[in-house]
Length: 544
Image 1: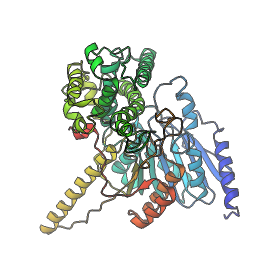
Image 2: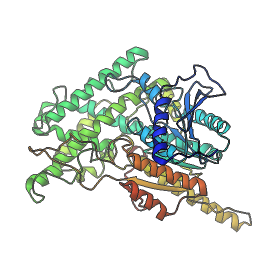
Image 3: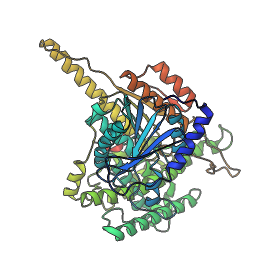
Image 4: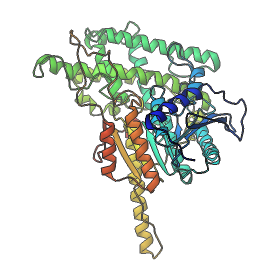
């Protein structure tokens, strides 16, 4: 059936259909037959998979045969007053899309181009990659039954959803035709756990030893403990912000007074960020800009000494809170403590940062003193059984079975580019091994296929300079975060470009040519296709 709808009118109708969709009531029991309605040129269906996960299917009446299954990112398993409401989010996330801020804009754009969209809220909030994989397999079958003209399926998702997307491609390559993991967790959730856990432990060690940081109680008591810890982290970071200029330490710090008198708190702050592997630039600090003339001493002192601490302060708020919530979540799933830093050599883990950030760390002697504080501090010990269960959860092999276009920001706070760098390295090793096996097979007279490199990585890099300063010479943090910083901080144009690149890959069964990709990236802005760029590996992988 053909329709005669102008582009502007169609986009408006799509938007209206999405608004109407949010008012639908999800059925209360699982059903093989979703409840569907057509409005504004969009067929929208809702239902539940067999595990009770609510889902949404959407396709325009001019559906072009390519559909995107979206896997949502990690959502905190508890409500945080004034910040995060688990119950409210479960309703909002019924509309497919990359994030609460821009998902409707992105969905409207893709539906107006004729693509289908579908996604699930999943049966469980929190880290649920294992359950999400089963849900997605079932959901793809539901989609194909409801929309039998489907020709291609593209899997995509953000953060934990990027992890799920890669896992789906590794374990069920026949179900999808291309994958687009965004700001992904790569390899294992333990990599994210280590970064966030080290950051939280560093805040606890230097700035407030009363932070529980693990071993949370079950049920409501544990939720209360997490909220108290979040409050303590916020208080410590607020105090650190107030002491950036003077070097004052938070009143809650139990570091010996002699050390606090000799070393400014911003140096310990920088130490925490670097030993955990947090980026040294942030949403408002580019690491190269300073107040005043570029040749002035004030400019040089800010860039070398203050900027890393301010950037760490901004990034640490995300990382430490993630540490609290992810640790508690994984403890509940696996039945005991899972973060373990016994035997960790934080001097080795600090690595070259000891020299690169020597000014911010107040020199080598101060760095050694701060490392001594870390060495003497009580460590966290995992429950062996819980850790074994954690390591049996879904993880990646680094095998890229279908055309895969990953996008990430190297300097973002929660899933830095080191996650995708792990995938790049693992894929290279797997492709090299496959080529060696093919050569061996040919030499022995056996048939062999030519291994393909199915991975393309697009980097979301922030502008070279974006820091602005107030009249007092401090970074102005009142504006929005620079694109390429924070977590999954993408524009709708960038996400639509990634979707279109994924659709091209699905159509041809191979990665699109570089010229086509660069053309789409230029229109989106802020994206780079650079095969030579390497992001810093996460400490979990760099110290294995």
